[in-house]
Image (cartoon, rainbow, N blue to C red; front, top):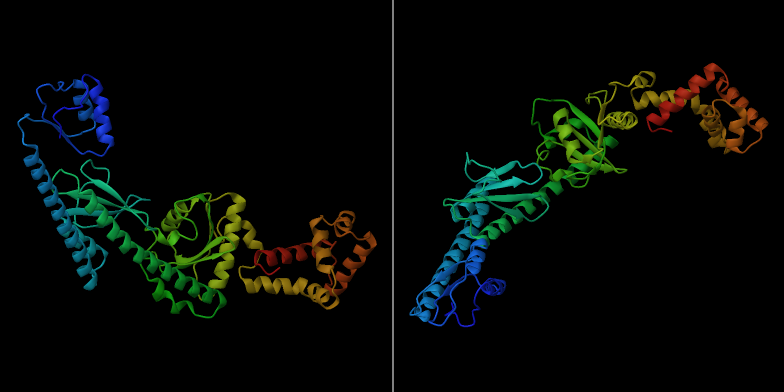
Length: 429
C-alpha cells in the first residue's frame, strides 16, 4: 500500500513496479495523496501483462483498517489450508490402516481436498489411477494442473478443482509428496519381486526347480499358455534400461522373470508378441530380441535359453529387431535343435581330439580349427600357428589316426566344421 510517495512519474513507473514485484510483493494498493503523480499507462500495461493486482483507492482510506482485513483474510486462508492438509494426511492414513488399494487411497486424498485427481504415466501418457470413474479430459486440458511426482516411477498428478480456479499450490505439492511416498513403496515391492524372479530364473536354468512350480508366481494374465525365453540386447536412449525396465507400467503385470547376464537382459514370459514389441520399444533404439520356441516337456528352460541366444545372434546378423528360433534361418536345419544333440555331435567327431589335448597338453584342436579357418591352406595355417608346415602335417595326420577322418578330405572337413559350429552355437566350445 502506498500514497504515491516516492513513486516516479511517467513511464518510469513501469521500472518502479518491476522492482516492487522482484522484491516479492504480491499486490499493490495506491491511495494517492494530492501531490502524487498520476498513474501512467505503462505501469498499468505491465501490471496487466504480469497479472499483478494493482488497485486504486481514495487517499482517505484507513491503511491500518485495510491492513487488518488483509492480515485476517491471509490468516483465515492459511488456517483453511492447514485444515485441508490435516484432512489430507488423516484420509491417507485411514486408507492405509484399512488396507485400501492405490485407487482407494487416491480417492481418499481427492475427497479430502475436494479435487479430481489422476495419476499419469509420464512415459506413455496413460492414466494409471483416477479418483473418479469416467473422469473426462486429459493432462493437456487448460483447466488441469500437472504436478510432477518425485521418485523412480516417472509419474505426474493431474489435478482439477470443482471451480475454474487452479488448485492451491502448497496443497498440490502435499498431495504429490504423499503420492511419491506411496509409489516408492510400490517401487520397492517391484524391486523385491524382480529379485525373487531372478532367483527363480537362475534356479530354472540350473534345473534346481521345475517350471510347473513357478507358474503361480508369474501368473496367467492373458489367453497365451505358452512361455518363451527372451535374450535382449538393450539399445540406446530408451525410456528404461535393463536395470529399470521392471518399473515400466506397460509390463508391470505381464508375469515375467527377469535377470541380467553379460550385459544382455534375460526374460521368461508368456508368448505375447505385441507386448514383446512394446518392451523392446521402451528399451531404446537398436534393441534386438531373440525369442525361443515355446517351452515344453522336451524344450526346457536351459534349451530355451540356448535358442534365444542363437535367435539374438541371428537378429544381430540380419539387422532385424526380433528373431524367433527356427523362423527364417535356414542354417538351423543343419544343426541339432538341443544342447544334448550338439554335445553328442561334438563328442563324436571332436571328443577324441580334445581328450588327446587334455591328456598330452597338446594343440591338435587349435590346429584343426585354424586349418579349417584358413580354407585348408597348409601355408596360411602353419603361419597362423607359428609352426613348420611339416609339424602341421604331422598334427593333421594324428587327428586322422584318432578319428578316422583327415581334415583335408571333403568328408573330414564337413564333419569337423559342422561339429565345431554346433558346439559354438550351443556354447559348448
